[in-house]
Amino acid sequence: MSDPLDVLEMNILRLRRAIRDASAAGDTERAGELRAQLRRAERAWDALVDTGDAPTAPQVVEQADMSLVQGAMLPAREHAHRALMLLQTPAAPKLIVDVHTAFFPGELSGAKLSSLRRDEERSYRAAPGARPYYLCPALTHDLLSPARALMTISTWTLEQRIIGPLSPRVDFLVGTIRIAEAVRAATESATTAKTEGAGPSPAALRLLWRFAVNVPGATPVSGTSSGHDSAPDPRQVIDAAEAELEVHADADRATRAASARRARKGLAEDQQLFGAPLQDVQHTQTGT
Image (cartoon, rainbow, N blue to C red; front, side, top):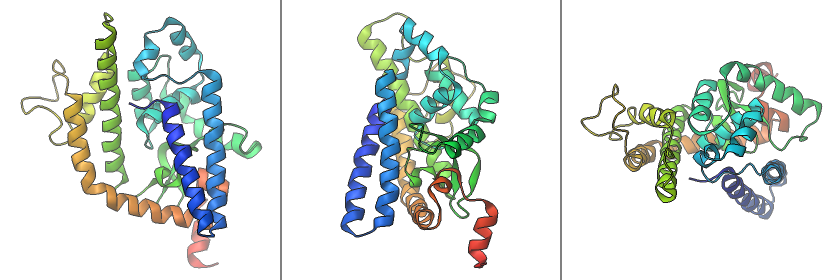
């Protein structure tokens, strides 16, 4: 299970390679957009290092009293950021709250997330790039407008923040894998530490079950959705989700990549984060 710093470092390396490729190909526009993404990712990395907010596994945070106190004091946007970094996919507020409850300390409610997207956009427009990251909406693949009730992180690539026809299922499977990895990491950590009461929380096991029952082959044949006494095996869940993911991933990736190319060519940087107004999209499509 990668922690937020690991994920950011992987994104930074990927962005640097992409910048090099774009520069070699003479695509200055693409290189410029990637450099802006790289700057945001590096600021996010600096912020995590400066605050020490880099748990190796979500449950490790729960086992330290001081970390519990610090987690409870974080603002809602930080809580949402943690949950999204664990999932690595666009997510609705309810899922963000459920993931946060399952794996992180502190309180987060759907009400706190309801106006967060608007606040983030206002903050960006008042001082672009002042924050290491912004919570922003996912973008629809066709109109490149804000997707309803799906949140992402500005440091993610455009491809990761775009929703195509197959993306809901693909993102569900990716989220299933990430949750199973987190449960497995917590279980292994508890076994190694031999700490009484450690391990995945009941909320984490319920969340894993909720995802697993919607993936063919992820639960034992005798398992039922009404019983949580025998939690799904994380390894079985991961294998089943990865098997189905192979069926959809390439087509979904192609759709997202094509839409990302259109966005880089046709949208300003702020619109690449927060979406294009529908009237602008309509004017572009009609040529007016």
